[in-house]
Image 1 (cartoon, rainbow, N blue to C red):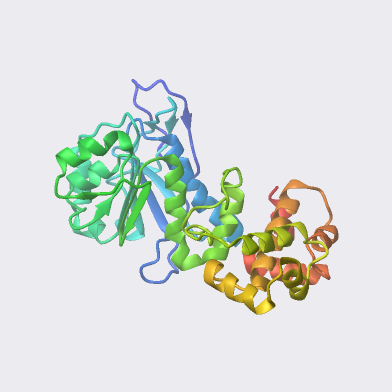
Image 2 (spheres, rainbow, N blue to C red; image 1 turned 45 degrees about the horizontal axis):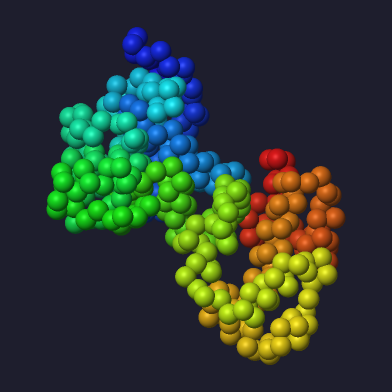
Length: 343
């Protein structure tokens, strides 16, 4: 890792994490190895949000699903918008393009919008244009300057939208938090960087796995679902009141689970009607939905309490710890004991 820092830079330098060897055993088209290009005054919040998604995915998988490395134009440390610098693993010239699946340009509120010629030349190389190309905050200006957004849609921070539209009248800029358009992806800021990265994982890893990451990283979101809209089964649905009542009954009866017949009796509709509503509005079955609620509660108890494994399994309605452990691993891809060790 390059530890040099320009003489004029007085910011304290922080190594975020040593770059690991790239993942080579992967399917064609999989985005497993990410490279982030740091620009002066890049948004630390946007960068760490993106990295958190990758690191937490590795944590939950008990293996290295993803790698990332930080690069700068000259390999030197780069000062962030918070006033301290991040160490780069290497320079842009030293980067092995064969080990890159996705190249992400990191922007920030005070990043210069005129892209350095060296970065434009790099982005115009035929090898890198075959990779997935992304941006954080206003890093999308670099992609636009290099001409790699032709026929694509993109997003940028609201402070830069007017400027972007004036400079690049032919590019379709959306007033969205983030956009994923085939092999191009862009986001407007810190929070949207996390959601964008999670959605990039979705096709390969599936909703249960990505929801596991959300349970860790987005637990402080104050909304109805506590997760990004693309994961929320309730996102664009106007739930009937009796379906809301059923979900409430499930959430309040986990240790002593209600049977399907008991739930139907309490809400005054038939079991078949309940099944149809779950399928229509939530894309799931009542049994599956109830199980997911119990497993999420178990995850909270594992990370937030000192209860024993047996007590947690009983508190979440499982008849035995082996049964709980099996269901938990199927949902989160890790064992309960592994989750407990990480806290």
